[in-house]
Length: 307
Image 1: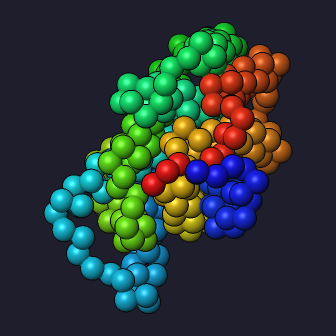
Image 2: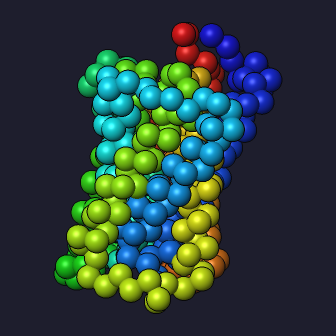
């Protein structure tokens, strides 16, 4: 095991952590821009399919492309369903009716589910401090609904919120599943290729099944550019960094990056999309971030686990 002073020497890990924290903070904005003219399932599916093509080029250039076997493929498909189809896909669908700021704030509660799930499977221990953190987090969620309770009357907004809560459940499950079974080991690029390919094909099928209007002639250059950004940075770069971080750190420690994502996403939503940030929304953000921090903070929070 080593402490924070030693981890600073691990430049690859530092870069991976910063990539996850910063890039995924920008993806909420990019998704919101992409779904302005492109149906959500097309955004999610094309994003992941493009990412799989990028990974294929990388693998072929390295002469590392190969069949991973049915047993490993099974794990990659499960992870793909949880993290890409459910978590990423449903977040994308939700942002058709929910602001990027609100989507990022709801997503910031995922470390709470990661923590509770880690306790359930024996990866983490519960404590009184954790209870306080959970209560703070849920208090933040109450502030969100207090501020926008009337919006729940709108069925589209209500469905958007349901999709978001399904998304964070999928994300938490995928994070715990990955660490518990250690499926992020081995060739990360190869694993990601199969994950992206499966999610991309499945989500594009969903797009043709569930999109009412998918006239590609109406897709704006801005939305297409945002979708390409999501493929290159939001999927390839960030997911590679996420997998690498999970090989070095616990799922709870990696998941606390969610509140950095949230701060970036809220700021960008306000700055670029003129999204309204109310006083109650700010209180909700503070409560959720404090709750996540209280649960996870302890001296030497960034310690490498024993192999």
